[in-house]
Image (cartoon, rainbow, N blue to C red; front, side, top):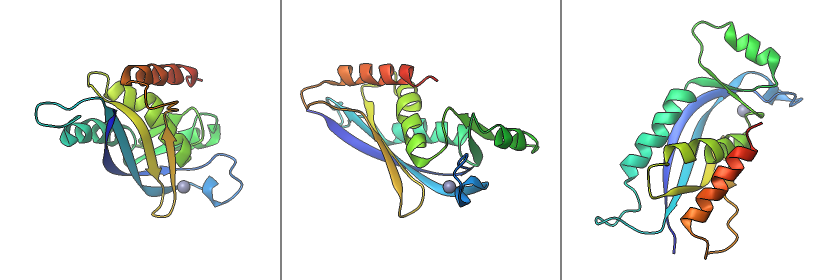
Length: 166
Ligand SMILES: [Zn+2]
């Protein structure tokens, strides 16, 4: 049996979608909401799979450092990356793909969450990124069946993170 909890983290970031062809290719920003779902197989003596405050410290800590009030760009967007480098000071984060809500959720699930949870008993099974109040994207582990355990899921995450390192 898996027990899942979710911690919501809010942050602000700028981005643009390379070769979008519409208004999303202009520099602009959003008030994002990221929902991190983590799953464990058991609870501690208090009855928690992990402390909500611990999740907040890990996920908010990473987002504050890397994405909050920063600018997200695709590594193939040379024009955008060169432009943001001209701004002093500037904070930016280059992704291996366009910074859509889908790709941001995928990056958080594949690359960020496994690092942040490595010393815990839980794994991230889903990340939802809300770009507006009306639109979100969801990245989730491909769970073949309820019988799979956390160890197997963690292996999948490691494998998909490796596959995505392009
Ligand atoms: Zn946007």
